[in-house]
Length: 234
Image (tube, rainbow, N blue to C red):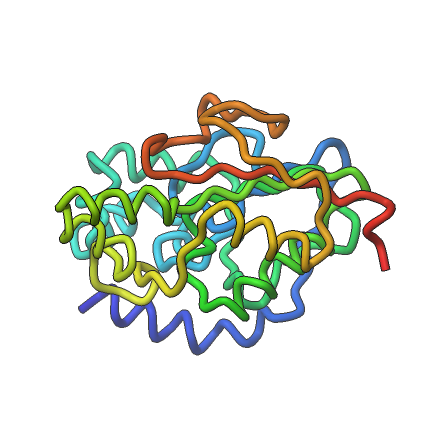
C-alpha cells in the first residue's frame, strides 16, 4: 500500500521536473540512467523509483520504507538499502522526461535493464535524450535482456522463465516489460537516433568505465556500446 501511495505522489510531483536541469561541477561526468539502487561511487544516478525519492532521508524513515515496501526482495539486508540511499549521488527524475542535464554536458551514460520498460516510441525518446546530453565523442552503454537468449530459453522448454522477460517478475509500474531487443533491433534504434560506432560487447568488456562493478547478469544480457560522433550531428 505504501508503494502505491508513493507511486501516486510520484505522478503528482513529476510534472514539475520535466524541464529541470542539474548543475554539473565539471570534470568527467558519468551518468547511470535508471540506476535503481545498483550504484557505485563516481556516478550520478538518475532514477524515478519511489525509493530514490527518499534518498538521503534520515535512517528511521528509510527503515520504515524498507519494511513496508518490496525492497527486501531485491536489495538484500536493511543496512545495504540504507547505505545505498545515504552514500551515493541520486537525482530523482522520470526518464520519460529525458535526462535533467544540459546539451553536450555528459561524458558517459550507462543504462542497464531499463530500456525494455518503455514502449518502443518512448524508448526512442529516451535514447534521443541520452544522445542530446552526451558530449561529442561521448559514449553510451545500453544493457537489456537479450531477446535471443529468451527465445532459446523458450525453445528449451523453460517457458515460464522465458515469459517472465516479456511481462516482468513483480507487480508495479516500474517492473513491467514493454519491449524486447536482440542486437539488430537495438543497433537499428541507436543508429536511428544518431549514434555511431555501435558494437556488441562482452560482459564487463568495453570502453565505458567501471564495468567490473556495473555489469551484472551476464548470461541474459545484451551489452551494446555506441558513440556520439561529429559526423552524426544534424
